[in-house]
Image 1 (cartoon, helix red, strand yellow):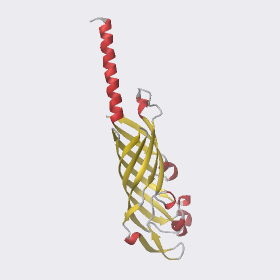
Image 2 (image 1 turned 45 degrees about the vertical axis):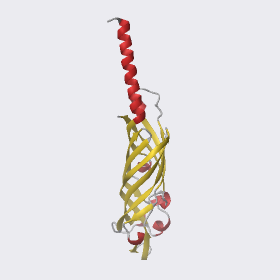
Image 3 (image 1 turned 135 degrees about the vertical axis):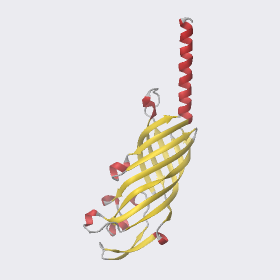
Image 4 (image 1 turned 90 degrees about the vertical axis):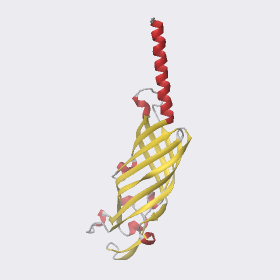
Length: 215
């Protein structure tokens, strides 16, 4: 076999392998990410796994050990001297890539709130009560592959940001509220089920970093 023939075979193999890899990359991949907002602002963590098939997206996310206290508490909860610990906030989403870097999703999530007095109130006692909420909403996700043009291991490095709207669908509280004796204000008060988002709204923003694995 001549040198030119060997070179032709090698070029064909490399070309086929590259085409196959890029085809798999663009059609089917699993993206594993970690949230940045949760450890920085909420003393917890968040992991997300997305399955991308062609332009369809199926996602699962799980937040854990989140703390809402101090400046993160406003309104009724602040007036009552409360804080929240969220041992989990978890759920799935499904959507479609409207652009190569942008997808929209419908999302169903489940959250647990453990209600207690804010530590700054210096009130003795553990958890006051706990409840769960289920949200049904939507999310818009943007993605950036800073090394997308590379062919080495850096190719799959992924950065993403998201804006989500997760209104409460139902809660485990009767009529979505709970009456209890509040030691901070010294009277019986009503706690209304909290929203999961920023400033007790249904809106959530996040930034994540992760890696895309071609299948």
